[in-house]
Image (cartoon, rainbow, N blue to C red; front, side, top):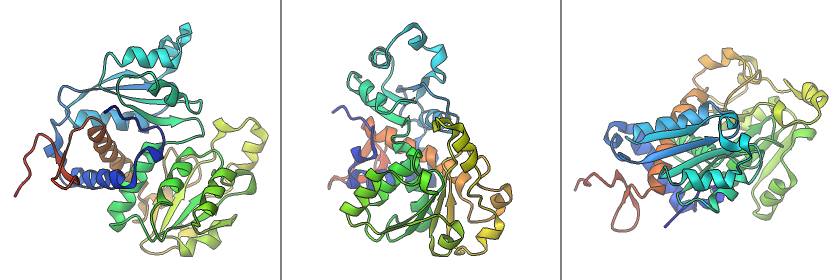
Length: 323
């Protein structure tokens, strides 16, 4: 059955847990997955600049033994001739087995999926969502703590325009015992619809404008950059840029086993001196993003072997399961 992943809600919790399990298996033994997607093609249609997400998708497919085609700049696509994203998706569906797409306008990947004949993965749509970044975040947290529940998660920086934190808070809210600290100036606080979702589901959270005060209670600190490209008022952007900077001094008040995550790229919100701290997991996070996307591609293409009880057997279909 044709499946798309456009919002993080498109992955039921049970299926998400299967993907986490497969990603963990890949991290432990990536070599056995080297020919799982042989003969399959991923198309990366990026209408907005990207380095990490696009290359992560391409690395994931290549590590699975598949091939990649696509473009990284809308200026080199037929968009400049007036072609709609829907027509692009309809055409490219003829050339590939799965599409990963990014677009600066919210919900454009949804329109593309409505006409595509292959699975479409939303790789970021404006300020809306970024579901595969959330998969990356969850895989990283799971690898560090062995769970994704009963944690205190601090989300710091641009919570208004940050699509990564929108998706992450929706997903982590599914798991019991999680609580959130929303650290941002009022102008960049979490959108009302996200706050409403937390209230409706009785998920505990606090709102703060002080990283120093929040730090001692956190298991996970998720830093984000102030996204200048989302601001219409550049004066406001310049006033807010650099309002939160994580450095070694602030980390003196953090738990020894806390981890620091960041979807990248960073600008000035994490000082480079923090990179040497064992709690800095943002570059490891980039590596786990490859494994997360490998697992998702396998899931959408039906390449994960299922056990008799319907649970993932954590192995590709081409392998026999050990007794």
